[in-house]
Length: 391
Image (cartoon, rainbow, N blue to C red; front, side):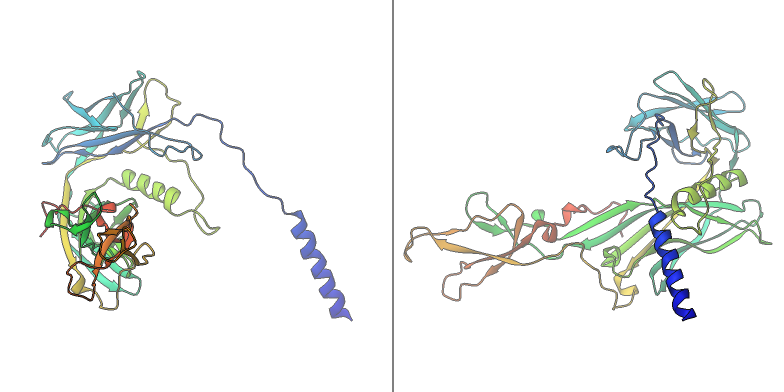
């Protein structure tokens, strides 16, 4: 009897607790939130400097990008030398190769179209050590790309990486025929091939590494990117270009906090959001937030290729669409067997892939099999043009 009473009491408590829950509908932030975002580095080596300027957008806005146009940007050193950047469109500003003096300190000066002036703090010019190697491991989760590097002088300690991916892939089916634009199908020429393409992407995650707690400045197999077993990126051939940046401790801490705020939230065990304070300031309005952290350094890079033959044969690419084959047949224009045949109009969403044999003396097929264009046209997700660097 006592157990029954206990269970009833527990049930009542649960019901009461459930009844007390209320949906939480936070108010939409009323501030404009149109803050300047500065992305990029001051490249002191043998490459150009490119800076991207944009504005923050609200979460409920349909627009996801808001480039900052018509700004005036320059690199300034601590000896009063200035190096202007030119707009190359869509919020990007670039300079020629500057080969800056690594014994000086540098900052970024920005004047936006509304007349506000932004300055970054002076930062030292760091020399990034070379990448020793980029490699990969076969894991249960997929293809793990890693990087190895070290600095014999033991004075780098803090590193950041980003990367560009390129891969060769195929459409699910090869379209052998193309409409002649009137009433029939003709074989595709080599120039009309849409079966084999090249895709590309850039890193969107923040990849950091540190040897600050080690006796030697050595980074060993730092994970860069994980490619799932069923990704089409490794269906044929995959390439990754890894870029490496030396960082100061303050810069590393900024990116670590940015990573925590953007990539490591969502559960009760994750870190709570923290205020992000960069090294760029608005001098015309000291209370105006700015998002970004400017560093000055040389850049090291290395590219590797991974062939499908280097991964387990059980790893099969999963096509991103459901592809069902349909048939499109010739029909008698006037209902008799001795007159011209006409092809049932092929919907623009379908592509013919194979001819259906007639089974008789006529070489003309009975019709064609066809699939959705998503399943036979690789140019919808890539380009047929081979990259100039491709080996």
